[in-house]
Amino acid sequence: MNEISCFPSVIGRPYAITIFMILIITGMKVLSEKRMELSQTITSLSCSIRMEKGCQRFDFSQSIEDENRLFLLEEWDTQENLMTHLKSEHFKVLRGAMNLLKEPCESCRGEIRRWSQPESVRLDMETATS
Image (cartoon, rainbow, N blue to C red; front, side, top):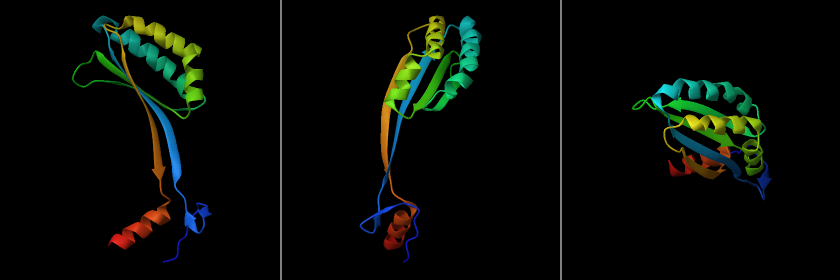
């Protein structure tokens, strides 16, 4: 089978690509009378935060079981860009808005490193196992 790949080869074989990202999920329980205020603050900041260097995702959502439970999902490309964000004015405003919470927010952070094989290798492996 002829291999056609846009990926460089090492000794005739394509090498894997590393994908790295930092994910942060923040859960918040807000006072019901302050939910709209917090939601508007986060919504107004979201476009600016998404424009920050290294921000791959900044999503805001509400639980379907509890309308006072809100979530932020952030994805950053490097630790350096995340640290710059944590020192930014946007983040200071966001942290200030956390005063509207009923209880302290819960954050979960994970770093993901995934090795991905070029498509031509996947196709060869699928053909070999068929």
